[in-house]
Length: 225
Image (tube, rainbow, N blue to C red; front, top):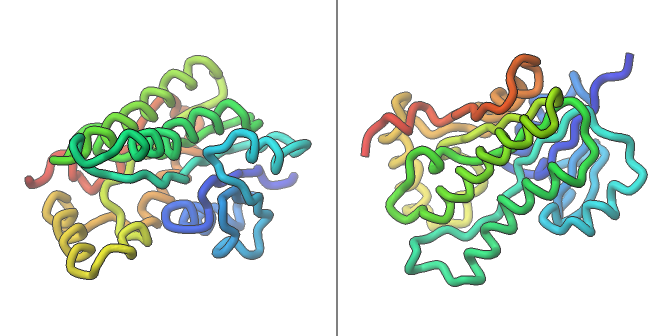
């Protein structure tokens, strides 16, 4: 019997790349993202995942996937006063709208796993938009689980993860972000992409799990200030 197929959206870097590594060998993994660097050796579909027309074009005629995993997200962050209308719309499009349209337009049959973030449950000092987007994705997962049952739909919600996301920051700011994450975590450290990837595997493989949000935040919702 052929292995089950998985499409990982955003599989070229960070959490998505860790998901690809976690599932490879047990599944037939394909990736979709704007860049192909980092996914050599896999069937890769180059497209802007937030653009339904591009996604439809690159997947035209493709057989349905058994599992769809959405990790892609590029969103500006900031307080209500800092973000422009354009930045706010971009954030919504590149995370919530992306998740919504992929769930709708990509053919999958057994499970869908979305990615949110623990700010949905524990907002920061300047995270109103991010918190709302993440909460929206978690609500989306619950609603699609009801609508498309018995196909399974879940959401994985990471805390602060030590990944390439922070590499663009000056060293002192990156260190401050990760130090703050360690102080909030009950485990005393930020997460890793591999931590989140293992939760994604659980969401795919636990056949009695649906409509749930799996928090992978080291207990940061309950930790320090």
